[in-house]
Amino acid sequence: MDRIVECVPNFSTSDPVVIDQIARAINECQGVELLHIDPDRDYNRTVFTFIGTPETIGEAAFAAISKATELVDMTQHVGQHPRIGTTDVCPYVPLKNVDEQECVLLANRLGERVATELHIPVYLYGLAARKSDRRALFNIRQGEYEGLEQKLQDPNWKPDFGPAVFSKKAGAVVIGVRNILIAYNVSLDTSELEIAKTVAERVRESGRLEKGQRLRGRFDGIQALGVTLTRDGRSSCQVSTNILDSTKTGIDQIFDGIVEEATLVGVRVTESELIGLIPLAAVESASQRLAPEITDINDKIGKVQSHLKLREVLSDRILDFKIGRANNTQLNP
Image 1 (cartoon, rainbow, N blue to C red):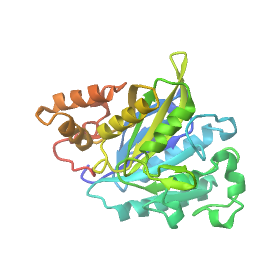
Image 2 (image 1 turned 90 degrees about the vertical axis):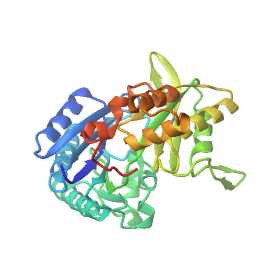
Image 3 (image 1 turned 60 degrees about the vertical axis):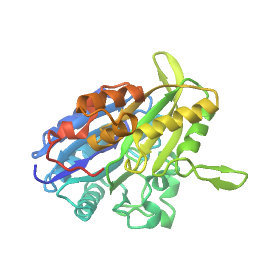
């Protein structure tokens, strides 16, 4: 592909049957390539990553949203991650020879189609937002699915597309445009959620409230929250983060910061995990900070994986490798 747009829809399900049906809907569309599927039972959420051209990506995005709307029932959904609908969020990301404004047009086109054909309220966020208070996904999600019916009654939260009518089964869809984001979770050796929340508050850019004052967190461009999960028969907690700009704050810096903050409250970091894919540039930057003497790319990847205590094989999560254009595709950092 000479022109590449990435789409990273997040669906409120971890049901393997539903996941398979959504994957089939994407794969049936011409001119797109499904790169990765990342389900999580505790979050009851699955992240898909696929690419296409500006001419092909919209059909696959609509097919995926349509299938999720058909198969997922939000009245039955329980999970750890904030969400507002069956398709919680569907961002476009310009990767190669496509600019942000072209992706904004794609987001508007998709939003109008979803609202018209599926009769679901649609909000635009990120670079596609029409209002300043809708740029941040957090603001749109406030109240989550459970508060959506009341939110839709507020004229300030009239959808960008579709009726201001609560869709009990589907909720709402948030569609937008953003640059490359790294979703990254760090697990703590504690089952006390307040500890995870404290660590998250200390590392995220928005910080925390203390004695009526907002204290800024350690890192720019970082969103974070504390969550509880159950794995291998035991309860523990995670600091779930989004790295909005890895050129400002690298994944290794986030990991080290969480280790430091966790140590201060008497717990240790046990492991970490990526949700979805990571650009090669972010891995190379982390390696440069950790071990500048390493020149071999495989050794760089191994160094970063070891330092981060990653659950998965890092080389399997690199976006450039998945696309198959590591040597000639310039991705946004």
